[in-house]
Image (cartoon, rainbow, N blue to C red; front, side):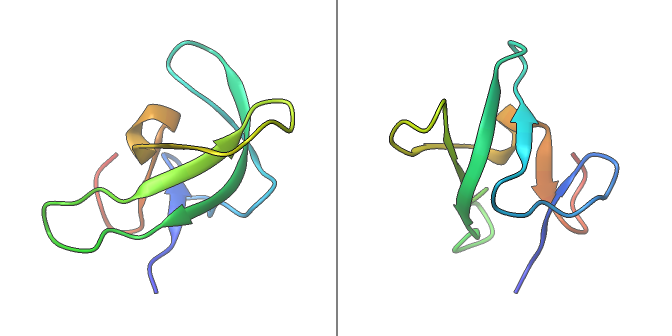
Length: 69
């Protein structure tokens, strides 16, 4: 199982707040690991408790442990 981390290497957990490149803040609701080498996986977030939306990890400054951000 791979860990999703911030650019500084700190692991992400459900409920953490993240900020995107537009300076919007969201709450991490979960994630899906990459399924193959060409995949980046997905991070699922909510905005103010609304329904989950999936994004590439890089949108939120996140990466999988051992990968360059």
